[in-house]
Amino acid sequence: MTEAKPVTILMIEDDDGHARLIEKNIRRAGVNNEIIPFVNGTDALAYLFGEDGSGVVSTHRHYLILLDLNLPDMTGVSILEKVKANPHTKRTPVVVLTTTDDEREIQRCYDLGANVYITKPVDYDGFANAIRQLGMFFSVMQVPETA
Image 1 (cartoon, one colour):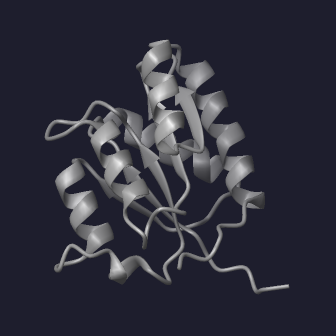
Image 2 (tube, one colour):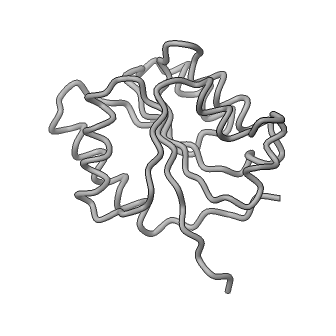
């Protein structure tokens, strides 16, 4: 059995209120993993793929990506496509957290390789509960080695 590596959570969310709520509920669920926040896709992809854009920088890192679909500079779907198309990041688990509940959009995200798709309810109690459940999921999750 291989030793469990700490998973760093990359949160790509431009709404500050949602980002604080997500982090608060992850912590409340007892998940103490590092969370690195990004407010746009450009910065998140630069971090994941490195200066040379190859993604090699992420080869031995263990990430879980929390991805909003509605970002100011690009769509979350295009970020998902890029992450899953790169050989160094394709196994990185991606959890889509968005207000979009369009069935075609949900199916498209799963087709592109999203691991989980969670619709953010406008009802904050419901949203907080969904994030808490997600926190329990993180605490037992193992991330596969990349490459």
